[in-house]
Length: 153
Image 1 (cartoon, helix red, strand yellow):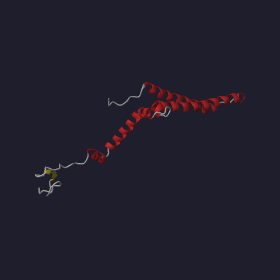
Image 2 (cartoon, one colour):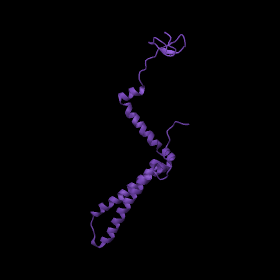
Image 3 (cartoon, helix red, strand yellow):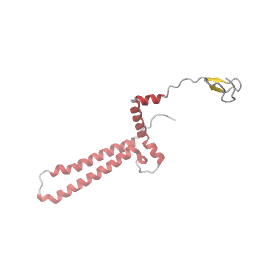
């Protein structure tokens, strides 16, 4: 089994960037209503202009919502974003992000001196043991009698 981190596929990247572009276009459509509202309003074109404003505003908002959903599916995968209910696939889909979060947490903890000392483990002193001449059991160096048979050490 390979230990290399999983790559995000080209299809997911396409969804992610496509959703980002759709959201941007939706935002521009929505903002265009306010930009053109300040222009010269012709009273004869009032109803037609208001319909145009409504279509652009609602269409822009819908495009932003759909773009965000598509972008989320691209980032997290279909199962990871909840479109497909498959816990095993969801775990695989979001694995690059969980690995990234773990790596970021590890980077932050490596900056803390206490975490570094805990990660290296306690400085273990060598334990000296004495073998009992009677039963051959190992006992602490300071023991006067064997823990197993009670013989004098």
